[in-house]
Amino acid sequence: MNIYRTYDDLPKIKLPKGQEVSISDSTIRDGAQMPGIVLKAEHKLRIYEFLHQIGIEKLETFAYNERDRNAIKMMFDRGYESPEITGWARAVPSDIDLILDIEDIKETGVLMSVSDAHMLDKMGLPNREAAEEKYLNALQYAVDHGLRTRAHIEDMTRADNSYFVYPLIEKILEIDPDCTIRLCDTIGYGVPFTGVDEPFGIPEMVRYLKEDLKAKNIETHCHDDFGLAVANSIAGYWHGANWSNVTFLGIGERAGNAEMEKLLLFLGRRVEGFDKYNLECLAEFAQFMQKEIGIRIPRNKSVVGSNVFAHESGIHTAGVIKNPFTYEPYPPEIVGGNRVFLIGDSSGIEVLRFKVQDTLKELMGVQLTVEKDDKRLRSIQKDIHKLYDKEKRVSCISDEEIQAYVEKYFLFEPIVEKNMARKVDGIE
Ligand SMILES: CC(=O)SCCNC(=O)CCNC(=O)[C@H](O)C(C)(C)COP(=O)(O)OP(=O)(O)OC[C@H]1O[C@@H](n2cnc3c(N)ncnc32)[C@H](O)[C@@H]1OP(=O)(O)O
Ligand SMILES: O=C(O)CCC(=O)C(=O)O
Image (cartoon, rainbow, N blue to C red; front, side, top):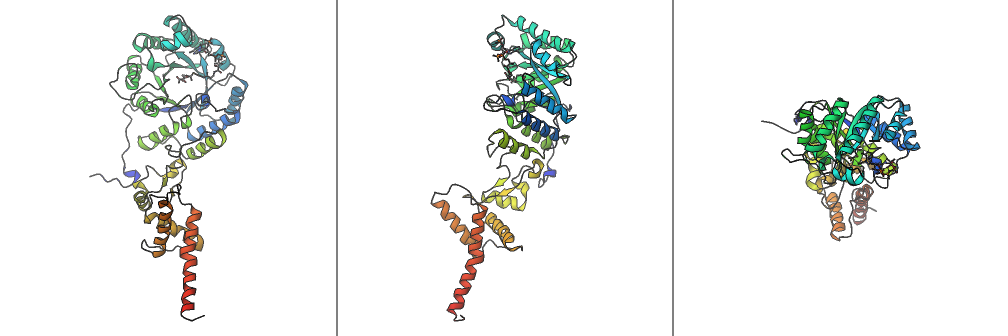
């Protein structure tokens, strides 16, 4: 028999391949490409600090302009060991030179666009052979200049993998056997299931890279156009990838990228052996992104939305008051969040009783017990129901309103009633 009544009772899932798994960040690179977002150097520095606090292993950055370079300098000046600051370049030596100009950067990604639409239309190359030559030359240039490399295989989930991409990767690994092969699901076409035909199945692609091509380092970079980015990142790990490249809140091009916070939570809470990341600053990080950078966070967004530990409905609140495990997936403090009970149109008497008790304690400084059948409590509930029944009220009842009800029914009315009774009895 298994009894699951606390978080510790639940078993952790095992990563089937058992490999060491890391997270690389693209918030200040792909994230900053989000339309309408401008990251100042100071913002990038603050993001870097949060990533450091969490324990993210690596980040990537452009070095195209003065702002990029200022941010890089500011980040290096912090003197942190992690995340490692790495570069990003197109497959052209002049881009790689920009990375080489920053002495402290030891690794760069090189963009290798592999779908025919990208090579022939976007880049205007005459054929696949020309693309291959361009990519291998750029990689060789980076290696010759002492950089560690990542090959960013752009649009791999819409490319001819068997006939073009895999042979290209074999040649990449001949140049640099340690090169990290980044499987880019650029437009979100990848799927996380096994048994899916090329070029869509992330499991099959990762398996091929690992087992057939013997790639030592495999990284996913998944976009969320079909809502599968996080699932695809996890599928990558499940089938042998040792890196996943993500952004905080999933910011990035179009529908964005795989969300770092979801991946962190999944690994940290559900998978065995992942206590290396510190999630306690996630709520604060999200607030920073909202306030300083202007990313609006939907209230129901996993991990960092304002509703993820907010409870209103009768059955849920009555459960959570007794044991939070009933309707909370993990304790709020894990991610720096707070539990809140709200009174709304779906609330029952138990949560109202709980709030009223709390309010009384605050007003009077002593812990009183209010019973569910207390007439005063039922009067407050009646008043609140009337508000919703008129169909004008669309929000929760604020703590100030609860306080006003408590003052009315628990503090003032009894005094008025008592005085009236004294008058009737002829005492005054
Ligand atoms: C999927 C992704 O997220 S890729 C990253 C996207 N991010 C960005 O573009 C933001 C940073 N980009 C920039 O600052 C600028 O685009 C720069 C500095 C890279 C280039 O600027 P410009 O010289 O003005 O070029 P522009 O932006 O108009 O066009 C992009 C160029 O990159 C080329 N390019 C695209 N993919 C690759 C590749 N894999 N390797 C080499 N060149 C490439 C395009 O062919 C195009 O060059 P072309 O006009 O000679 O054909
Ligand atoms: O640099 C990369 O990760 C590849 C380009 C990209 O951002 C993508 O494919 O979405």
